[in-house]
Amino acid sequence: MRAVARGDETALAALYDRYRLILFGLILRILHDRQESEDVLQEAFLQVWRRAADFNESRGRAFTWLVTIARSRALDRLRALGSRARLTDEVAQAPHDDVGDAAEDALKSEQGTIVRQALAQLPEEQRRTLLLAYFEGLTQTEIAARLGDPLGTVKTRMRSGLLKLRELLRDRSRWY
Amino acid sequence: MEHQDYQELLALHALDALDASEARALTEHLPACAECRVELDEMRDATALLAHASTPAAPSDEVRERILQTVRAEPRTSQRQRAVETSGQVIPLRRPAARGLWPNVLRLAAAIAFVALLAGVIVLWQRDARSRRELAQLSQEVNTQKDELAREREMSARRLEALLILNSPEAKKMALAGTQTAQNARAMFVYDQKSGRGMLMTEGLPTAPADMAYEVWFIPKGHLPMPGKTFTVDAAGHAMISDQVPMEARENAIIAVTLEPKRGSASPTGAIYLSSPAS
Image (cartoon, rainbow over all chains, first blue to last red; front, side, top):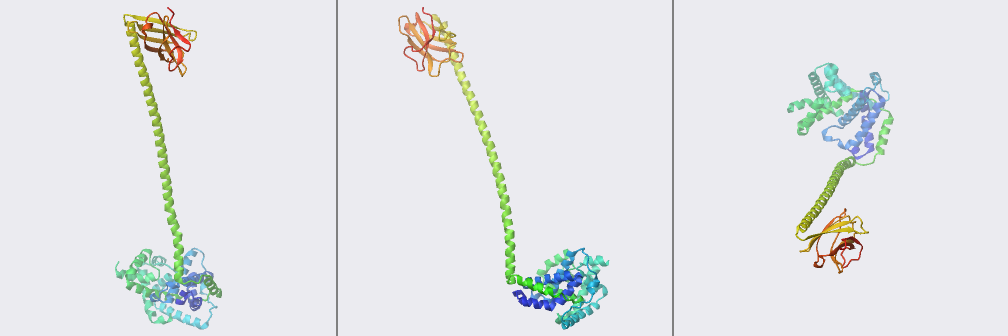
């Protein structure tokens, strides 16, 4: 990340190669549109290139920083698209055969499996509120309205869910 | 809000799920609370793990190429320099506006004030000029009235003198007739034979030219004309001239009026306008 901050293009290329699958998967999950998602992925990496000096190692992991940027850009695009018709989930759910390096794919899948297993241990309501907030960018109030649950309940579920998830994955930090 | 309350907001803040007011309150609390900042960073790490809940997907190869091309097209400067340049671009954009707006407003205000002042000066100047004109007119009127009053007084004094002369025991009265030169003119000369105080009252004499004046002559029998006073007449040809009749002319003399140069002559040079009949 320091090399990227110094203006090292190859460092940026390495960063892209390492995180493109998880970041593009994240963006695609939010937008459900390959074209838009590729645009947003490009935007996200240009932001990483331009703002790499802002990244503070002592404050968090590079993975967290990259994922946060990609998610914010995707949610911004989602809001910008507004009422524009979105592609259905089926398209996004379709298997992506163009995943490159098989070993890398296996590794990412393994990490995804661990997180999905952890999520599966959460009560359904907690998991649901977390995913609505994370992938649809809904606020606590919007989620309460969407699910028809009291705001206080939604807040408690989200907080408990995230704390539980952190607990379950605490020892898995080596993966990220 | 207590620290505990803020702590409970951290997880939702990491998910960007707080409502605006709560998010603002927490953002204001964070700079003062290291514990909350550390906790929030942990919450963000946990939140980022949710990205793994999505299925990894490969973007097309062109995306990598586009990113690297764009990056190469940008100037090779460090991030810090870029930040400085960016701020350097922002400031000049603002400053001219800040500099430009107020002076323009001030210039406009100054221009308006100047025009108003100028208009005021012009109005006052015009008023002053009008006042001066009125004052001059009034003073002229006063002077005219003074002159008229002075003439009236003089006339009264002369009438009184004429009355006194006529009232004296040895008063003499002589009529003067207009000559060929002034056929409409006539005059009366009264005098006290004893004292010699006399008064000539004319009418119908034409106005004398600017550099000329009428002159009274006393012509005793067998003598050369003796000069009296010079005088001018008003528009009606009137004049009242008091004069002292020489001793020689108090009996059987002729009284005549000629037109002479303004300073008067020692002996008649001009035409005779009025004359008493030869006795």
